[in-house]
Length: 155
Length: 94
Image (cartoon, rainbow over all chains, first blue to last red):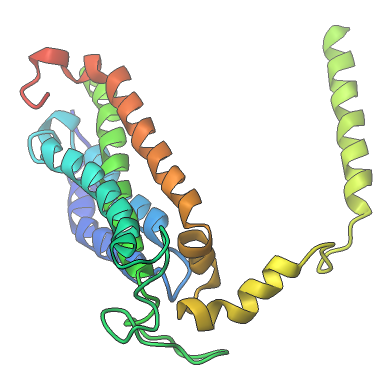
């Protein structure tokens, strides 16, 4: 059994916008309120929307679970790797070695209120992206597993 | 009887907490040294506008590492618990 056609079509139309908004929250974590955890949760909400609107067993084949496992593990490894990369260059663990360096994400910001620039903040954007990928995969997996028990009863 | 006594105790406890909370004044924390340091030097040291992200991912980055590990462990636990409903070992994806 599934929801009405209106609900299904609305969910299909809304899904890309939910994902894009979540990626925006992840990417602008060092400028606007939000960050990796919040953006990843928003993206996972898109998966919940589609699963609730359609029947679970129709959606199950469309979501590659192995990709979600890889996302979850890869995000955590990327997070630790960004912290360890500074140690290779002679800095302490989790030192922000990219800030004010002039390279990737290395522009300084003026002190006080300013409009904000995406290319700043050192490795904070890298950390946000890593945590965002991890939360995206992890929460989507939790939603998949928990809603699979509901689907077995046939609603 | 016992239920009424529990409710009465809860009300008294909440009242004590409210009276204690009313004594605090907002906007003047007792110790604000760390806050002042983060707000004054955060933009210059980390080059980010969002001070909250600066604290969470840089000054307290090790804490966030533990947070990510907790999430990872929680997902593994949910996977183990709900595996039967998903089809267990018969499922093609497992």
